[in-house]
Picture 1 (spheres, one colour):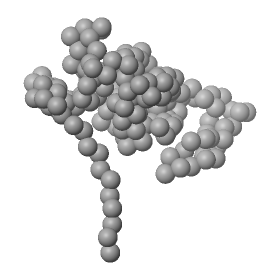
Picture 2: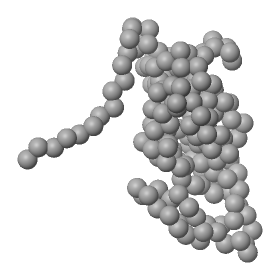
Picture 3: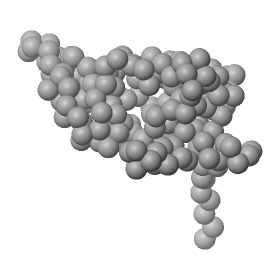
Picture 4: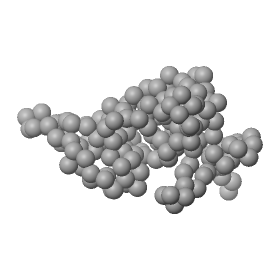
Length: 167
């Protein structure tokens, strides 16, 4: 019986792109992964300054804005009474929605935008947080992700984790 499988393929055009994609941070001793053609899309950034963008400049600008979100919780950190148990930073849902919309606006011009969106929103399956009425239940579930919630609007709002949308 034959089967087919699809896999992600990222083409590196030169040694510089390969070294930028995976670079060792000597101080943190952690693996930094930057998406090819960008300087801001991935863990951290390799930009020399705020205006330094990669070849996929529209996508990179989206990632830069996302990276600079002022309301975020680092991996293992706590904010707004929420503990981030993930090994990576999670952001306020407002920032993730702005990132989502920015990538959607760029995806017709740059294929990179769609790939970054799919990896961040669909593959990573992260969560964001917001100040909202308590969740009663999930009313729309897709691929083990809650896309719509029912809230108890008679109770006080509180900070809570929410699944990010599918790209």
